[in-house]
Image 1 (cartoon, rainbow, N blue to C red):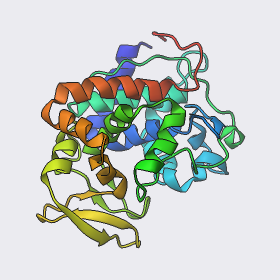
Image 2: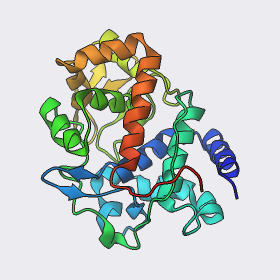
Image 3: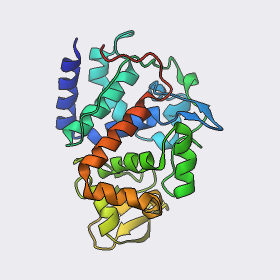
Image 4: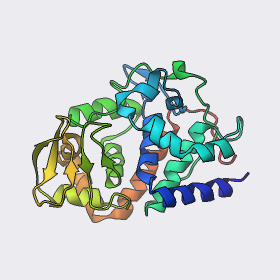
Length: 268
């Protein structure tokens, strides 16, 4: 078993199933529970594998324990080996390869995360740890600053919405942010600046914004919050310079994936 072998199998899976966006979401929600503010603890430990309680039952994680983890089952069975590569490591690597396959930057991956042994190793709740799509700037800062992220990091990480879509049966929101859901580029920032949005309500009763131009794309309240100062200056920078976005995204994303981890190594 080598990292090259694992990467090749991940790439094949992403290309066959077109599942890159949900793999990014899996890693993000696994690692994103970390906090060092009023709430403490949390780390990427693949606790969502367990659905008898904890993170595997969080509303914010709907679709991940069944769809995303299910898609990875063959690779999990083939490669996950205690002391070599954990489930949490595999989820991390898969998200990073998915980003690259979809046209995004190359993201370095380190190994050595410890898997949760049961749902009891989950954090207590998603509240205060994972962001809500129907809230604004203050909420984003309340969630991300205790994780060690700056306003610039918040904007960079939000750029992951350039891929994927909201599913009403999972988040309550419905629709894609950009016209190409599997192309990782800076279209999200361009759309924020160039399109006009108006209020709508999803079929689940959640408030969101739709493109007035009829493209069918949407934004959430938390997305449009990035058009407020000082976030808007960064949005404008990323819309004009994809390389700047990619560079900042890699830095913030690796930090997200490694928060709460110790003793990570560069190789298996």
